[in-house]
Length: 121
Image: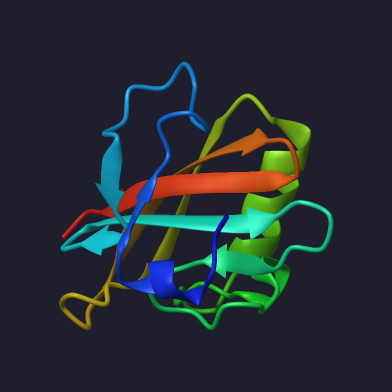
């Protein structure tokens, strides 16, 4: 269903995000908004606008000083709250190159963590 071609394209999340009000065609990363998907069983990214696909979300650190294990926090929150949870952390905004506060909402469906969010700047 997902592969590397979606890294810069669009993905139809309408069926997978049932109950959430999201666009049928949600761009992976447009300015300050973003989407990523990871496997719950092993944490590997299968969709991400910036980070290497196949890497483990649990290894992703924030750009806070000192860094916090943002990926591990998102992963843990997704497993503990499969119906949805917001997580906030600092990360470099790929559109501006500046560190900004990110707000990520993650929800689990089947064996996937679906995340969307935005940067404050």
